[in-house]
Image (cartoon, rainbow, N blue to C red; front, side, top):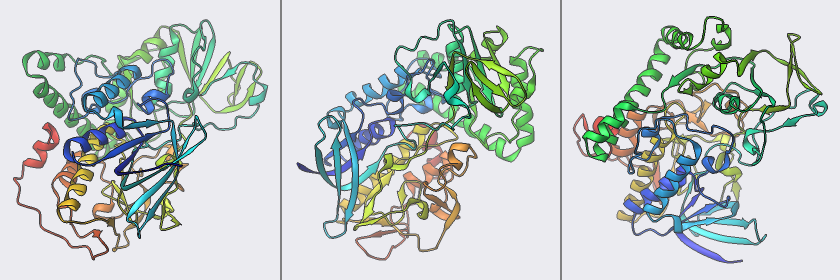
Length: 508
């Protein structure tokens, strides 16, 4: 069993892990690091999912990293393009050679005596184990189980004579040409799959238990293209990001403050997209906007497929599967050759790793998260966890910057151990993802760390506020214990009122 030491260990080579590594190289150039990745390729989500039409559901000008402009006019990019972007970023910034593939981290133990983490990783190809130690550990594993998605046990499922295919395990050569397809679900995956399959399939039915708020979005941004022609690439990128961040924040905040007005707005937009024959009950959710994530419809492709008769929507409950399809509670029967349960994710923190501190397992559901970056009581560890109401990567960038600030601060002051301490008993009921009411989040309530009721323990989901907190507030703010000493709050240096706002919109 080999043993290797690094200053920083990053778990996961997806969007978050590559982003963290790039920031580390830029801001902590003297630090040794490696990325442990279970898969045989980087990209995370964008390497795993291969179903037809797979694409981003966030605009690429805010989903792209703040240090590497997303070029072109595509607002919503396909999965292969996003993976290429992440791969090219890794190469350009020299982090690709730091990735070690095919390693599944089995254990992660912090030793207060040695002041370091010890990880044991299984090489899944050889069956051998490898040992790594590090002064700092950063989890960049996302928030769901890569091995399996969520799928209910449907009554009569064994009776169905056709194929059942989960989007997370899409067969490479699945032929659905001329087949009748039923997609179960109404989230981003279903909204993407239905038009993606409608061109070849005989017919695609989206079977939903309840509707989701939808927002059509053009795939090309003409204003962004005009800015790219008129301005230097970085300036055009920052202006486009600033505009898109502002629009996203406005829609989210108005949805929380004036849900009835925003509900009318969203439904009126959909009404203009569908024909007069369409029953609006299929598009009218029973919850307020942004209680669950808004789903984007690229170029209105779902509505185009519906109007052309290549696809349809059924809003009903499943009574049972039959040999030839699905029998609904209403009495209707949906014929199917292929059934696709796009029924959600199985939430999993830290890639399923159960961290220990001095031999004692950390129960995440009993812990609160500091600034959405560190779990209280876990030394020298960070967690990159993106946004759920706007582009994930906006949070990846500023969380990575904060962890680099923390590491550099510790070096300057000769500190070796940093632990966030919740001395005010701020543990709340909401999980770290508590701003959303989606089923996959509710199912994982016993696995997710909590957010606090106040202060840096409360998750804001507010990008502008987080920029101020993570980029400009002092590292020593009275909540982090360094080298076992009582936390001390230090004043931050005076800064202009507009600097955090300018930094948020136009970059650091």
